[in-house]
Amino acid sequence: MKKINLIYASILAVALSACSKLEEDPESVLVTAQFYQNEGQAVSAVTANYRKLYESGQSLYNSLIQIGVEMATDDYEAGPRARNAHVRAISGLTHDSSNDRMEQLWKQSYDAINASNIAIDKIALIDEAKISSSVRKRLINESKFLRALHYFNLVRWFGDVPIVLHENTSLAPEDLYVPNAPEAAVYAQIIQDLKDAESLPAPAEYSSKDLGRATSGAAKSLLAKVYLTHKEWANAVQKSKEVIDSKYYSLFANFADVFNVATKNGKEHIFSAQFVGNAGFQGNSLASRSAPADVPGINGDYADALHTTGGLYASFADNDTRKAITFVTQMVSPTNGQLYTFSPQFNKYYDPAVVGNQSQSSKNLPIIRYAEVLLIYAEALNEVNNGPNAAAYAAIDEVRQRAGIAKLADISPALTADQFRDAVFQERRKELVFEYQRWFDLVRRGADYYVATLKAAGKTLAAKRHIHFPIPQRELNLNPKLKQNPDWVNY
Image 1: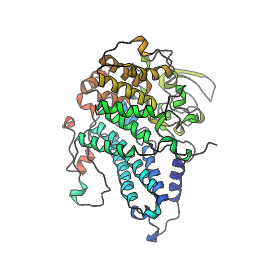
Image 2: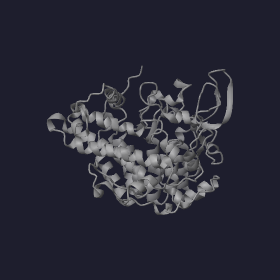
Image 3: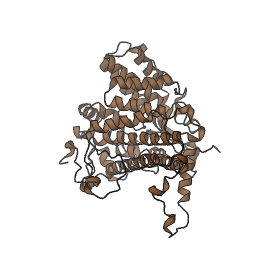
Image 4: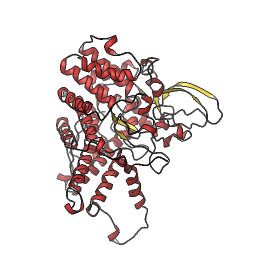
């Protein structure tokens, strides 16, 4: 049996400890003021906060972002088994502020932010004799990394959002109701948190029991992506180059190893959502949601479908090694041994170890990996120099060569800045399929680009307001200081 790393074991220990017999003695009650007393408790608390990324079958990085965001792109649509009307509304771009997926994106993100806020504040107060200074600093910066990731998602989804940096322990209106902060202020907070998190240990400084924790490389990589999204091109170049020059990461020779269970948390993985099926932990539900429903014995849900007219599948060359890993068109039934052929379906997270129960897939979901850092570097260099240089070509071609396709420098050595930008986005589309990237990529190129792309793919209801999601009506009702995104007023 593979050894389960500490980030899983600590979560399980916390969960099991909650199953003890109910005591009425108040001394048995643990609240945050009583819990954060020593190093062990602090480590357990922060470890548990990672779980908020993927703690259930519809948590943020366990299908919720896919359901709540990626459906609104040219790559995805609600599959035949997607029964929720709110999901089908996102796929058809008829969603509004009452959509329950929008509500969950908001609610779960702020719940995770609150957990990080508590950890940051409480760990700072632990007696010096009960926690080492190095562990204190590390845990606080891990929490800042997680907080930054959640705010980065929120600001891209909803635009101006409230900034909350401490646990709210008051019912006073001035404390309870927090207004929207401008996007620029949210980005400033994200950048500050990630700059602090850059002092986290390097990957090589962690032992195998701590696989899955945020590292300095993860902070630098996410910061490069934040800079890229915020169009701070020179900073994006600098940070992505620091990751590249660190030599901690490299591409797997075989694209399949990015998703294989045996090679997870490997040299290409910078930060991932961690899944261990059938072990008392959480499986990757994207495997079940994309698996065929009509092959006997597979028992897939087929709720996440490839958009039929989006052109994604056709964009892959036949010799592109990513194609057969990303999609599947045939399966042999484990029940009757017959071969079944069907239209292309997503396949990255299908786990052959749990054929009949893909909800227990142990394949991790990459949140950011080295291939994306190379593409960030290529894109940012192109913007800084108003056209690609040799280093930009080399970065994108490292990704293309691993895929077995021709180097861009060989087939198109004199691209303009606009042409090279398009080439990078097309490479991102193919490299990062089903990794929660497409919607973010489309909208960061602007409303006109998003609308034109979606309409060309047959999603004719696409409108400029769709580059953000509406702030949930429930939140507007609860918080009188919260304002709806202007593009969504009256919708």
